[in-house]
Length: 118
Image (tube, rainbow, N blue to C red; front, side, top):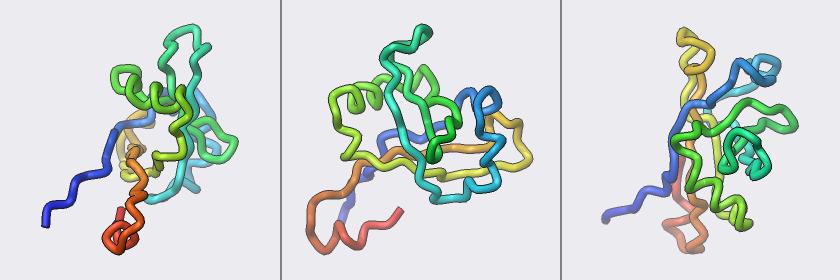
């Protein structure tokens, strides 16, 4: 049976080297949950979406890809998405070492939803 993808976005963490990601990068394993926070007052981009690990700002969703997520967060729909580290490339440049995936939560409440895997 066909199962729709829950993926909304898969992207690098933009600006990783300019924020505090280096302080926690050893803790960022595959599957580590991160949090998205809208920054509507950001002077460079009103659709800016910051990526946090706990209280540590890792960087941003890239500007070219942030509009849809920004709108969801702005209107209070942060409870329907989940964001995790989904790739780590230790040999790559710091700006390309980590990718995150943003998925819709599966709230169907049926057996298929409970067995849904990352």
